[in-house]
Length: 251
Image (cartoon, rainbow, N blue to C red; front, side, top):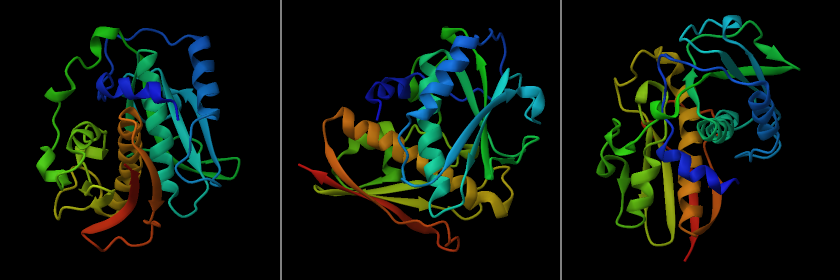
């Protein structure tokens, strides 16, 4: 895990519309491709691929220059895995002053790549540095007490909660004690933004993968060792609250 990505949590933002853009250089595109090859997966043994295509080859139309297309095998927890990998890429892009927007509603021209299925795209454009976030705590997020239960590791939860999510649904809750953190995928009845009802669980599982990445970067930054267990296997969509991961902590 590239622990330098932790600092980018405080800088990154979701660019819903790209304005005053600069040009992404060929060398920066190559840096992105090289970085993707060494990103850490959440679940080993799931094949994934990344393609960078001009924005015109997708239906995004948010002022982006390119779109990053993420593809995967459909195996247990593949959606969380893509979120975990894509979250690292999102933070790395911020280090290059490349803005990002996770865009899940539409699809690219190629929904298959080397037999892998399209999962989600990230629209990107080079942005002036002053367009990135200056004070993360001014962005709209649920209050810590709404997502973090327990009296331990609250500062870690206070940072991890700034993970991006589809329609800003923030579909996570955590329970902490001295020795562990349990993470749940939480589906609040009736709250789904513009997402089609049958796609809420799909995008929220990707969101959980990003949240787990932010959580792990915070744990590593605070020198807290852990053993991770993953439970959500992409099958149960009926429960309001589903346990997705448990971190056994080294104290």
